Length: 374
Image (cartoon, rainbow, N blue to C red; front, side, top):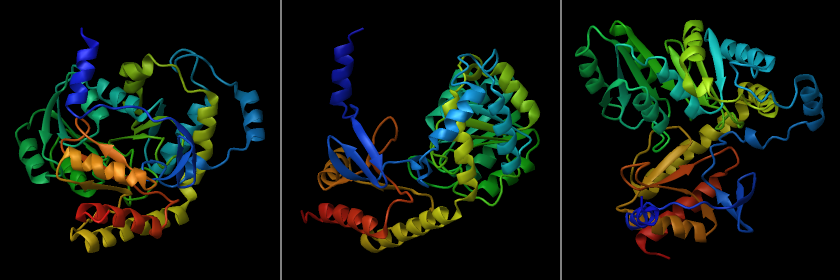
């Protein structure tokens, strides 16, 4: 294997990635190479991840429960903290049970593991997250990919498998474009066709209260590193599904449990996620404002109220140029390219820390560059 040739090919394709060394994130600012930038890349939508933890309380907590159990949850790593937290989370979100994993990625891998060797067909949105795609592939499940948010096409495909167990799976908020799923419509389809389960990945929606209820969802997975502001993942489901995950979920069986510090932060931030309505309202107001100003400046309507916005430019080169121009002017945005997305995209992630003025500056700079006023 010629590793250098592979690297050169990646560079030639324009998809070469490097790591930036981040010194600090404070409020809306991110420090890179001793320079502060307004951060439009963070998934900490509500700013909960920047809350200071009470270290004295944690020291008392760690003395009671140890710093780490250094084992898989299935052997001796299942701290009672897990059980207490899972009970609280499942009750709060209206599910029978909950299982905390090491990441949202692990959560999706474990969920699809339980269907391996079963007579199921997965119906997956074209733009679902990579962890869903990998979970389906690694579990060797039969799949049907339907066009993004095309529920008419989905229903036509469901009709073709009357005797199979059918799994409809979708992101709630799509990470590359910010689109929000029509959850009630998927629930209606699930109820209309027998032997159908609905699986929703709510990683970019959890905590934002974009939906009135989760009733009708069979399995809900999520990362806990977005609006939750911590580290980990979780699966909300029935007790039987949780039992299958414990017995068949390889990402769970062969991973050590989280350190107690992570569980403490998950437990602490859970209370903030439930109660921080003022932060949610501000974020929603910022999302509306972005949509309004984007339509004024670019004559393009944006309907999604998620904090994720995407700006599509003609080609990879122009997208890279705008990304660099914003960076040079003190704004840090996400440059998405293949294979993450089919079309190069600038992703803008809004957070509680931003102001309407920040949005004005961002959109004006993009507009000026596109018009050649630089």
